[in-house]
Length: 163
Picture 1 (cartoon, rainbow, N blue to C red):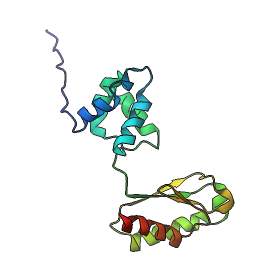
Picture 2 (picture 1 turned 90 degrees about the vertical axis):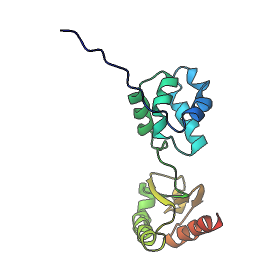
Picture 3 (picture 1 turned 180 degrees about the vertical axis):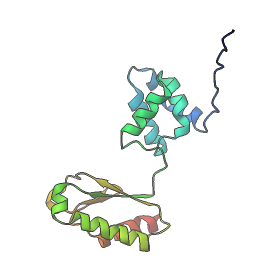
Picture 4 (picture 1 turned 90 degrees about the horizontal axis):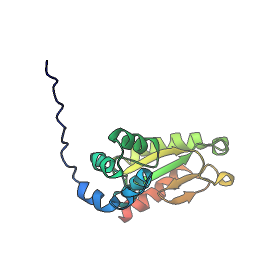
């Protein structure tokens, strides 16, 4: 009985493959550069397109599984385009002691009622380095101390309205 030969599966080219190749072509030749390549791609696009995993893996000389594993291991690396506004709410102990859980609940209620349809993502983080002024929040890159749902809403509205 003759053994069947496995034919190589050719994946369709991703829409960003050429751009990714240009972005990381030289960097990908350095040993252990996978994470730096993923970071460079995210800096450029704002996220790492999943359709680019095969070309990233090929250029970095690693498997697609390893590429996907590194991409999904680091929470700062994302596979979807980012929201226009990202609200980070601190959930560390110091902020919890001064009401961060209540702030989170109020913010979620406010988002559901007043910010529907806007490009706003909320993420829980553990420490924004502003413990003395908790509860702390960060809207995109602006740090808020003694944060309230209304302060966050005001800042989000100015960003969404200003674009």
